[in-house]
Length: 309
Image (cartoon, rainbow, N blue to C red):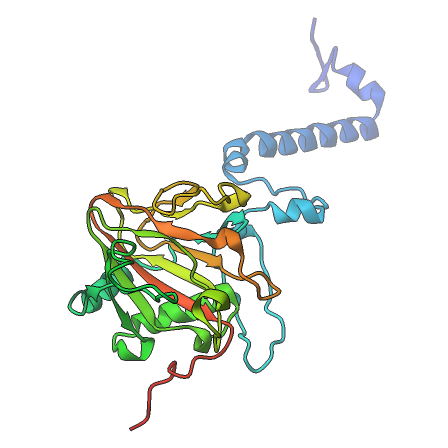
């Protein structure tokens, strides 16, 4: 029951007075702070949830770093020599074989570059020829190579396409551009092929050589619906016996795809011919095959640079 004395409420409220003013003051401050921080905490959950959480920094090993996405990795170019470059170059490739040493380069050239090369070569095509061994004749070797082709140097291409391709091949092989023969642009139609052969010339069969073909780079200029694969019948050391039929299309096969490149080495590091570098072009069954071949030698080629007038 409440009573009024001198205008003050006296009743249960008297208990608070008995506790003292300091205690009541501290209690009020506690409730105020709790309400303030509580309202701030519960008023912003949606805003915080929309913000990305910072990733914890962890110590990564070298192996872990090597598997990180390419865009997350950064490299700074090093100091370089006069013939070097001040930027990084990335040319993706796949190792197809170590016997022979063969590498595959996807998307090495653009579709526009491939079409440009075909356009400039198409009007100059002639039946492909062979380097003949002692005792061979054009008649006796008829049917071994049935494609059409032409030769063109990069300085003859006014569009600059071949010069850019040649520069990229030099980077991929780490062999100077001046060691390359002119491009041999070839067209294979239905049924046409190139039987198994070596790009390097054995002195015992072809006589003394001023220089030797070290490697070959094939740039596929077109897709082939069926057939036309580049094949390595001795890949891995198989089929290497006297009974091998050089007209058969067996072994490791590389299907032509427009813009892709194939690099293989004809010589061992000691300069001798790698017997597993034997290769050929399977017959085209459906469609056409266009390819630009760059043979690379162990010495600079005298006719690489244009002749001055």
